Image 1 (tube, protein in one colour):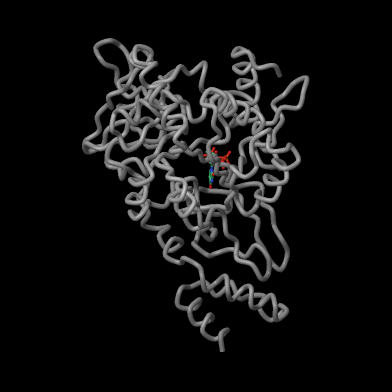
Image 2 (cartoon, rainbow, N blue to C red; image 1 turned 180 degrees about the horizontal axis):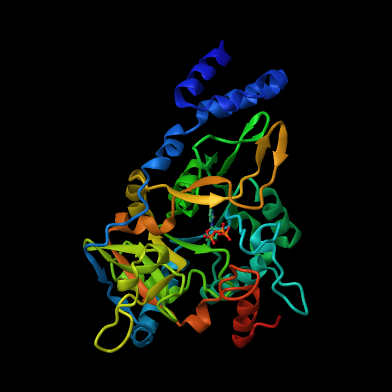
Length: 407
Ligand code: UTP
């Protein structure tokens, strides 16, 4: 009976291939498959032909930035305010570690990658030592949420355990698995990852807050009175996390979020740019920025849109609750998706379909106000994106060494 209902649903959605192997399955496997299909969000997949990737840039303006110089002048006031909030337990951090890290080509979670040269130093280890700098200054450990994916959660949790949580209090670290969306081929047909499993992939880093709430952490946030969340990416090994001056400056500016930015090295640098869109803060990704705006220079010869984000943001929790109620748009990412074909698993080398992602950069326009907080890139920005070349293991190692980290 249940089968009939699901079959009807799939026929009406043009997805009947999901039942191709149904007859071969055990009773248990059939129940798993039907259960997964019933929970699927078909509308995401059906949006492939009308998803608009283009932001409206008609009313784009550069954003006012708290520059490195401004920050230096008020550093003590900002730091004091940030330390106060940290000591009152009002700030927690969220590490985004649910990505696939395909560009690095490492088959474990990216955070487990060893960036040491003469010693073992994982990316996670380096981030935890950056955290330690702040907790020893404030004298208080903050809650740290770590978002993983269904695929890398087991390895990530075991790695932290094996490393004794890098000296952090285990009870203050909370792992959660990010939500997924179905993956499909270029014609919108959803893949099977096994004969009885629908292919589902992490829903992009924009899913970080809804996944946190769906994982049941709302209660902890409320019980502990956490007002701010410092969200950061796994790849930037130099960044400081829950930096008191950043927290203090954002809170004192009465903004509902803050974003660390660096001056772009050149117009072509592949970072999102923080600006104002229709009078609200917004981030325009490098691939969305028309060349004419990207290369525009002011009277001083500087790029007009020169402030790139580094995936280190501070969000006010109350404002986030409003923002997640708004629907973030889905972006299509072309990926190589492992799936079942003619009864066998296929692992393509080239992209063969779409993954659906919401992006954290799209959250800003719902926040209403944002403090752009400039940091010195040589001290705060060393992303490990690629194996070699720009933003690679090699460039990150160089920057770490220049900042006195023994590798
Ligand atoms: P990237 O955009 O670099 O994506 O993620 P990625 O999947 O890690 O790497 P590539 O593109 O396949 O090489 C930026 C940050 O967002 C996190 C990543 O872990 C990283 O910290 N992220 C990304 C998630 O947590 N979930 C996602 O679904 C995607």
